[in-house]
Length: 124
Length: 420
Image 1 (tube, each protein chain N blue to C red):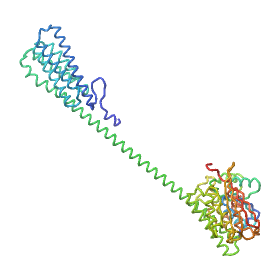
Image 2 (image 1 turned 120 degrees about the vertical axis):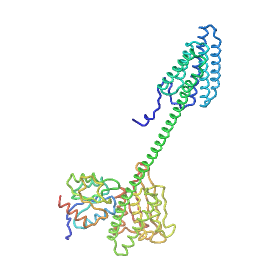
Image 3 (image 1 turned 60 degrees about the vertical axis):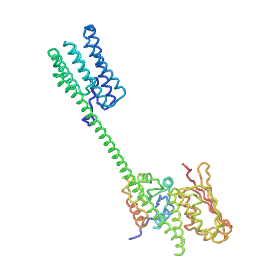
Image 4 (image 1 turned 30 degrees about the vertical axis):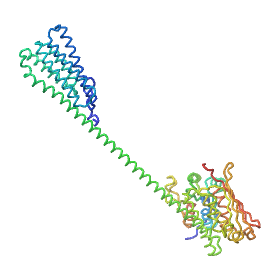
């Protein structure tokens, strides 16, 4: 398969674990051109959304015990695509209206995550 | 109809009918009957004196003897509640009175005196007989019939009184008393059976409730276990994600496979030690001194290599993980380039919690007596862990300085207030 391009895309990565967040940023930005911002919590995520353009978001469902759902609802309302990451084996922690979104179990396969990001961008 | 209604004992008041379980009640009933007999004899005695002015001494004599015998029997009942004694004395008084009435009839030779006496006696019997009104009515009718027949016989053939009446009076009397006694025993047995059944039902209900409680406990345990399994799955996946990320980041900043191996194994081992210590504390957290010893201790050359001066402050498990990794990177850096790379070098680590307002944990890391240091030209993963991870995850600040005598690091982290 051809390497997908994320030229000029701004990605918001919401992940509470610094090392995991850094690795995700490295993987996603490694596909040329994208600019990822990592944030550990909802408050910082909303700050980034208010201050700059975000094309797509990667959301860890459980942020140190806090649910990411309010942020997902906000992105949904804004029409910004997003994919979920989870350490849980299922998506039943999500409310029904968010269950159709792409969901990746940790640890994530880089290629599949990037492909999902490209597809989600294509749909929006 | 409910079961309790089916076994209910007749308790209509005012009819002299009650459940005869109590000896005291039985005694009271017999006493009452005997007092009524005494009252009856006294009334008839006075009436006899008034009407006949003491002209019939035999009648008065029999009545007086009757009165004395019943009164003595009543006195004997004062100190006993034994059923057989009470019943015996009651029957004795009753029989003496029956005989006396018959004798009075014979002595008087008129019909009125015995009729009055027998009607009185019938009422006394009805009071004594402790069961339903139907039986009482029948008793009264039989005694009155016997009385009328006795009087008729007495008037017409006084000499044949005993022969003619003994056979009819005695069975009436005895059947009355013994039937009442049997019925009473049956009632007591039924009441006992009801009580036993109720107590068995109650113990069954208790056992049932205990069983339900045990099932509920079992269900809760199972639920907790399922929750724990899910939580374990979650943690394992997060740990694998972290290991994957550490491998990737280590690989990124390693110049050779050997360098990668040393750094990666060191990081995984530090993570493993922290995990073990946290599990030992049931994931509640660790004391800062314990954490530092755990992570930095293995890099000691000798006892003075690492000096730890900490207060008793405690950090939660979330913070322990990232703080431990940052301390591990500081220690690795010191072992490679800083004070812990020589036997003479020293690292002094101190920590304390300032609890003015929002509590903050301050850790000071000071290296000295090692090789001359300078700021690194390339910032690898280790440096990023030290400088950024604590700020990212813990919201704290980290200051790194590289004076000639050795690296200095100041960590300043907000920590949740105890009990907050």
